[in-house]
Length: 500
Image (cartoon, rainbow, N blue to C red; front, side, top):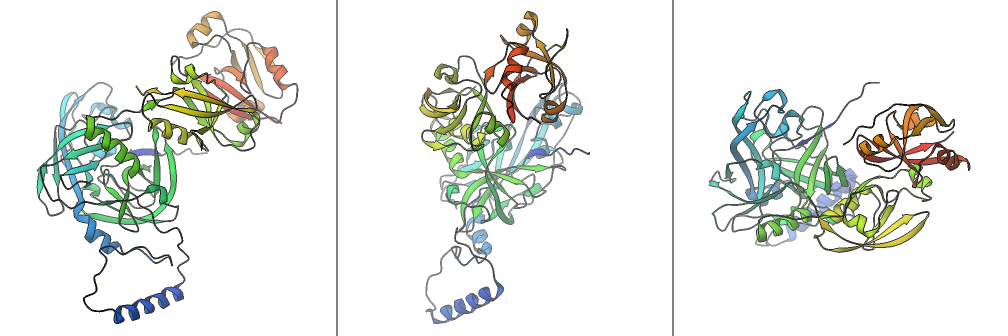
């Protein structure tokens, strides 16, 4: 079977998403024709000097938003951003080209590659140019964009829709949320209206305006495809997924809802080619505004840290921990000297609520903790040993070992399909653990679930294992499934195993 890998690509423009009426009904062509006729009669009866709304609201009958009015009214507040700077290439850069840190492995590489003026070189500092988008949120010249748009920038130029250009000052940027705030020396500028991403529903129409590949003031439309998406490497932002066509150059531009209000900043796409393939992701505007306020006040943004590594639950894992539904964030690892450790959290705990708000997916926990302030006290509801517990944690501030395989093999249990043995003292020290069993060979149920030779088995169903006999004992009751906590390359993960 051919395996395709999707690459997360940061766009050179950001886009904001806004919500549409939640009562939209189907677009029956006959209903639409009748509604248009009724509108015509109403318009004919209205006085000639009756004032018209700048941006028509989306009708609950499901009619298409007036994209023309949105572009005419708020397009002037969308700007193009050009940057230049010097990047110091290193031997680790992909193919030795002068590009942002991480080379072609960096998901932001597509932002720079292929854009006019981008230059590469084998070694040493190399000049580069890039282009993105942004939008004006303050009449005093305050502009929002993506942090990756202005990363490593020495000079930033903002080009307005009327082609006036200004040198911009970067007030601050936050790599955690990928939000940056710029300011230009101008007054009485056009601004966007800001919406509420919480009111968005899947299926609502959205409109993006930006500068894909440098083509400024380009508008594309689509719908909200999903909400609250967690992406690899982005643990804080609950992305809005859309199918509005966005490409490199759109990063930092706004995403509008059907009422013409900005609900997000376009930040990333998922693509096999580096171009648009129907999967675009925007930072919710409420997240961006919280970061903006911190940057304007202090020049930087801070984020809280709980100190846990979490993973998603599935039905097998949920059953292993005695949960009826796979809701919550499963704690796979607790960092030393962290808020989580001081509060008593343990691997195998399932966090189901934060301050009374349900946690259904692991990304929701990361978002709520990451957007809290360091020093905040949070009340967690934790599922442990098949019962609920209340834990309070005071949040901190946000800032790999290979397991050897050697020795005799001892079969743990035929149903599980593992051959394991206790770790030696040197192996425990190398792995940074005080207990565990080395997986030497895998077959059957464990192999089908993804357990690999070289993994270190640390616990079964949340209970530590130090001997082969403890593994056998955990299987004596003939459970339908078990949750194995394994360490692999220094990372701890839960693996659900369905037993035959």
